[in-house]
Image 1 (cartoon, rainbow, N blue to C red):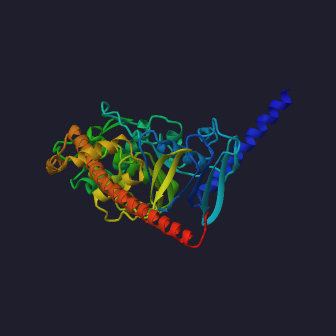
Image 2 (image 1 turned 30 degrees about the vertical axis):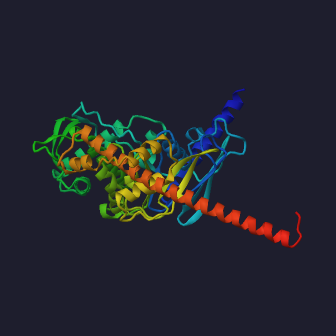
Image 3 (image 1 turned 135 degrees about the vertical axis):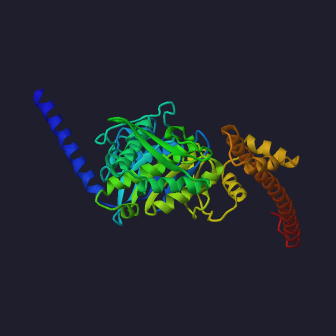
Length: 450
């Protein structure tokens, strides 16, 4: 009936209005994610993840569900009914995902059961950056209008949750930078200083914005000077690692600026927010991987970061409880939080700890055999590390060799530990036999025939 359709439309309109009111209220509040509880959902076993106020890093092998977990966590915070369904397709009726959050210091619950949200606080603003932070390197123009801007305070997680191409977001960031320059006719601005300092901290080399050329009304060319290139080049020609870092740091700055439009630069960079970055280490040199989390902490000290990565090197400088590893268990993949302070920890120790947490497979057997044979990658690693500039193939080779070397060292340690374990087991068995013999003698003496 027409009246029924009108009632449905009215209900939908009321819900949309309430969602908008809730979101506007949430924009003015400070949120902190405290705990994620997982129960009887698809893919993951029962887990509890205690998130820290600063950096939270989730490690795991390919296929272990790092991106899926971040995706669902972001969907809960955004109260996205469709995106939060991913883990309930074949789940039992009692399955749930539950978040404990703090709003201005007060605890609230977000709970998603199989069919619906049973508890929610509305859409919470977050920025979520996917692993595919790609820039079209064949296109040297930056096309956009000053009024055509992605509203990150509203849509900061949309591309991540909907798996949309992220190139358009990077294009918006570059357009914003172009207009920043054109308004002041200068690169001596906080936005450019932040990005240049981030790259210099990573590489030790100077990265500079050189020029912005206006090609037509809504098209620009931005030129930069990068390590190893004295001639200014279009920003799209920078390395993928450089572009990835520019994207992460630049977008976080733009997001905070959008959340706190009335604040000056030095103020809004100090403000609280929630930021997700999937595969933070993607496209980065091993040395960069060790420094990037420190750069995020230093520049955005009150942001709560939820990060995923493959490389254990990104945990350098992390405090106890800030690092978690996805492990494969009998009931599904589970989160194991590492109670270890990685501040000042040598690279080889990081590999030993992380790989010691993960389950061993055929890679352990291969590494153990190499350890027994005295095989080492150290000479080749030293050769590559001495080079001032690495090709992409050499960069990949170095990363692979460092990982292999870490596995070989860990395999040797585990081999020795297991030798010690076997020796202790034999000693305990001997003690048990001796006690059994003494018990038998005692029973005979006391006429106990049991």
